[in-house]
Each structure stands twice: as structure tokens, then as C-alpha cells.
Image 1 (cartoon, helix red, strand yellow):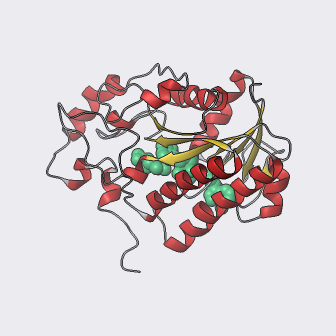
Image 2 (cartoon, helix red, strand yellow):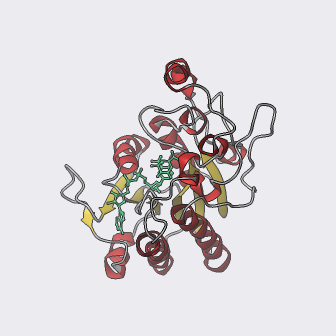
Length: 268
Ligand code: NAI
Ligand code: 15L
């Protein structure tokens, strides 16, 4: 049966806020969790991913989890270790113990951020491309994908790992014209990831059907995802303001954009 009760971790964040607005229309009963208070949601669970007892309680009885909680940008290794690596492990353990069958994991394009972006005529990047994290943050997403594979192979917990591009109301850079996922398409993709059958561990790219797309949406479409949006309507304005991407600028030459050259943490 299709999942109804879904735990949404990271509910106070940008994407969590967009998704808790959009997903109830698909029939989900969302249980919200975040370490920060979730505005306007007095029933939300306030807990850190380090609190295993709270996670066990939070997953009790849910049909699935959308796991968005974590540090969403580059940070020190210690912080990434606690929230993204140990935190995601704690969440998977709680899910396994409670028999939760499906997790949708917010991975990121930064798991493959050092991959050169395709130039005109190059093939789209497949999901099987070798991982090339651009930051400790991207490394933690690479870990999350491997953790998901382990929990499928060893424990039968299914995951769709969504390598999200940029999910914001509108694209704000020329790079984002390639990687943007509209909030509406984000909700469509999460719904597909929650309801598709036999996903085992499936890795998908999370974006709209952008004219300037860099990656292959085949695995996302195989879940039933049918994107409706394209960033191209924003292209004229953004290109006029910022110019086209320069292949000689490393920030423009890799999928991960400025994450490849701007780790604010070295030396440490
Ligand atoms: P965000 O930073 O706005 O939200 C993350 C939320 O997680 C915050 O509300 C924060 O309080 C919570 N959180 C952080 N550490 C926690 C912990 N230890 N315990 C409990 N809660 C914790 O990030 P955003 O943009 O909403 O992203 C959500 C997820 O999607 C993140 O995992 C991010 O890495 C991933 N993602 C987002 C993209 C985007 O375009 N928004 C792109 C690629 C990945
Ligand atoms: C991410 O993984 C970040 O969480 C998000 O804030 C954006 O920076 C996005 O990637 C991106 O690549 O634009």
C-alpha cells in the first residue's frame, strides 16, 4: 500500500518548509522533526539527529521517511560527522529497528561536484558516474548513498537517494539554470520516490526538465516522475546579468559550482 504517514526530518529548513507546504496535497500525513523549532507547527518534534531515543520515538509507526535534516553546506569535518554522517546512521538504525520500509534521502549534486559539467554535444551525466565529492559536505552525501545501499542489501530497507540540484523558488544563477528543481517538481519527485514499487536503492537526479540540463533524469522518470517545469524562462534575465558560464573558470566548469573552489574551512 502507498505510504501515508511520513516523517519529514529537517522540516524547519528551506526545502522542508517548501515540502511541508506541498506534500499534504498528495494525501500524506506528515510528522515533522527538526532540531530548530518549526514555525507554526506546535506538534513538530524538536530533536537532534544525535538523539537516538528521540529518533526511535519519531519513526514509530511511520510508513516512510523523507530525510532532509543535516548541514546543507560546507562545514568543519566534525560538524559534518555529527549531523550528516552519524545523524544519518542514527536515522537509518531507528528506521531498521522499527521496520520502516522506505527512506527518501536528500543527497546532493555535491557528491559528484568535481565532475566536469557537460559542454555542448557531450552526453548527460549518468547516475553511475564515479562519485567525486567537492567538499566534506559532498562526502557526507556520498556516505549517505552507500549507507542506503548497505541498508537495502543487508536489511531490506529501501531508499531513493535524490541528488538534488538547487531547489529554491526561482533559479538565481546561470549555473542554476542547469540544476534547478522547482518546488512543484520537487514534490512530484518525492511523491514518486515514496510510491514507486521495488525501488531497492535507486539513485536519481533531482531537477526539473531544464533545457540546459547536465544530468540524466532516466532513473527519476523510471519511478514515475514527470517533471513539469523548465528553468529556461529565467535564462534571458540571468544571462543578461551574469553572462554565460566560462569553461575556463573552475567554478563554472564543474557540477558543484563554487563548492569546488570555496571550501571555507582550509587550513583548519
Ligand atoms: P536547510 O539548511 O535550510 O535545512 C536543513 C534543516 O536540517 C535545518 O532546519 C536544520 O535545523 C536541520 N538540521 C541540521 N542539523 C540537524 C541535526 N543534527 N538534527 C536535526 N535537524 C538538523 O537546508 P535545505 O536547503 O532545506 O536542504 C534540506 C536537505 O536537502 C539537506 O540535507 C541538504 O543537504 C539537501 N539538499 C538541498 C538542496 C537544495 O537545493 N535546497 C540541494 C541538495 C541537497
Ligand atoms: C546543495 O547541496 C545545498 O544544500 C544547496 O543550498 C545549494 O547550494 C545546492 O546544493 C546547489 O548546488 O546549488
